[in-house]
Length: 189
Ligand code: AMP
Image (cartoon, rainbow, N blue to C red):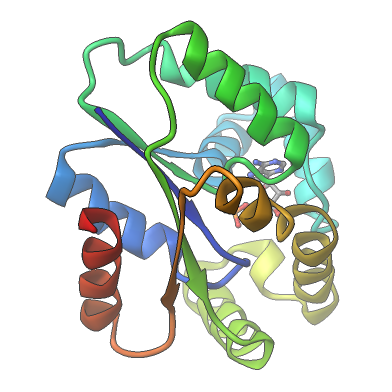
């Protein structure tokens, strides 16, 4: 079983690349951001709660996010693996994910991290905001807060997976196809 954490700041290209990796390795793609956005469009209780945090560029509380992620994983008992996109984002999420997977006799195979400089992230997010209409991509203050939250709470997870010898970093700047090849190489090595 191949279980990948696709890691990187907002705007690094995780969604685009996760879709390709999912197809290439026949994995189930779990994007916590996409699941929250789906719940927002359906106006579920979870969606309303998530929106109140997402609108500020803050993280949805761990207990809500973890419960949701676990319920998605158990929907796919026969999968040949998962690609986690946008999860884990805190040390608590990473530790809980490890314990949860261990209880199912599986584990994270690798974290692949996309490295992209801040100026490029802001440029990409503002341009995505114009195309997709995503509210949290249209406002510079929200974008800056998301990058700050990433640095304060999420970036440390690179150390978490490095200490388990599972971290592979990839240059996330360049043509989308080139970056995909870099990711495949990182996963296959
Ligand atoms: P994303 O689509 O990954 O950029 O996520 C969009 C927003 O959803 C984030 O800014 C957070 O508010 C929320 N979110 C997504 N994943 C998580 C997570 N693992 N933990 C907490 N909040 C999350």
